[in-house]
Image (tube, rainbow, N blue to C red):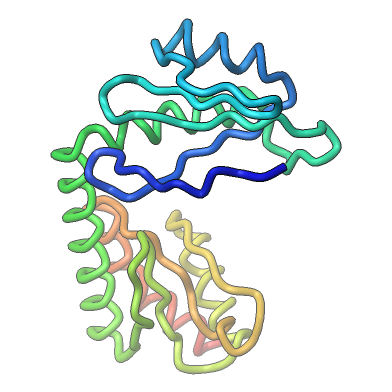
Length: 189
């Protein structure tokens, strides 16, 4: 199946929104009847839909055996929220600012504890615990045991890091309080 590679602007961002579905007609009804989009181009295996306000997407028919594991409701819901978020540039700018501030705070907390961070353009920061994966896992376990959910990569050498999301200010204050204790406990093991 050949796809149109056109990229269009959605809310000032360059994006190509595509939804893969097993039942093209049911998906068309959802987007047209519920969200008010209209069909602007029809192909045997695809429909291009337009909201008239810069929102658009392409629905592609796929074989159910080719699915990625996410059901159609999940894809529809995710696309709906993504399109809405892209349409609210004020909120998007606010969230980007909060995430940037969260990353800076995580970097400051790491530095206060003699640790470094890896550069990040996402909503999380990898804090290098300065030792091996076993030590990082011990730090992670201490943080989780005290109510702070963090993750860590599974493959060396990245597994010497813990991954902290740029959360709310009160969550990051909890990190500021718990990280020194977790590091001490991990060193004592």
